[in-house]
Image (cartoon, rainbow, N blue to C red; front, side, top):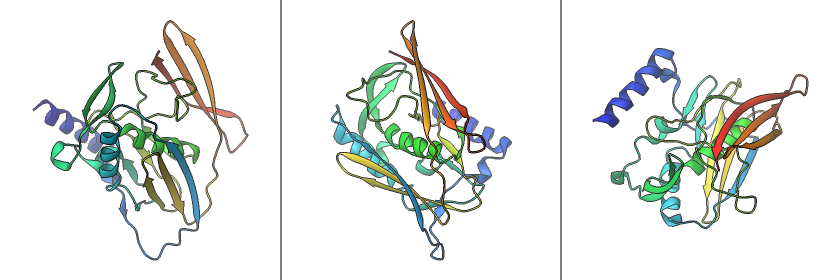
Length: 231
């Protein structure tokens, strides 16, 4: 019952903001020529419950892969995937909850939301909603993505929402292997890939990470996010 109430609250808030009516990837139309492509590949490292993670990723990817985000539309992670239940085939995977490592059904999906967030940030898409993880589990040798480019997702309260602010559609394409995950954004026109800059400070058992994006207008750095991670 609590989950249903939280879900209704989230969707009602989206309706009031007007975002709800803009949600949704669409099927590919044959008359669009996808001549440009930007890709990001991240490793899938050995970890507890890795097989469960791979299974969960594959199921989720099927709801997103080779679908289009049209101009002005909003990608919502949970709108595309829905409630990730055992009945849909999801299984146990590793998660971080309240700063603690544990396992739960559909664990591991944050690597999917993270890679989508990371590339979308580089391409200058508008990030409407994104949550960092509460804890940094990795060191320089085991980290597969820069700290500050992660995107925690928890159904239905923590979502990843991205708006296509370009005047042309974007095709989301994903490829999953046992050792790596690749995300491609294809488009009919070129998109500049901006460089991200990171500033990290540590104090009182927390690491603060600021992520900056170079401005296209004057080259100055624009603050995208400032997150605190428990060490």
